[in-house]
Length: 112
Image (cartoon, rainbow, N blue to C red; front, side):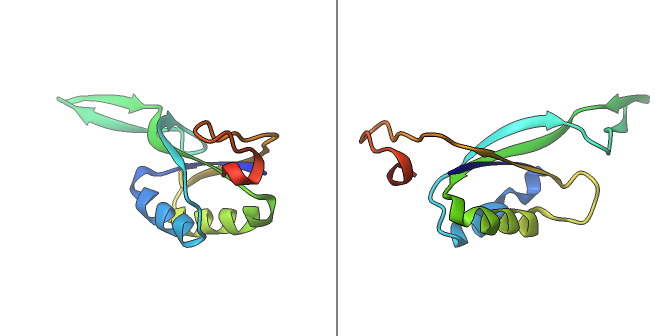
């Protein structure tokens, strides 16, 4: 099993969610995040004063999937989240050793 974490632009959440549901994924976790990468923030004007916004609003999406659907999951997220502009985000994949569904005690694949 693998944990797929994607940092995406907030307005792309619905597109990514639909793409993942199209693959049959039944659950995901979404958290608000702030950060920057190569875009390094931007400047804004407030009441005549210019200030730098270093950390931009993002969403962190987390899903745990079986090894055999990792590539499909990455493709679905990439296609749905891509706008072609700087700051589209990143995807990280890490191994998951164990999963337990608390309600039933199921483990492994059955817990997904």
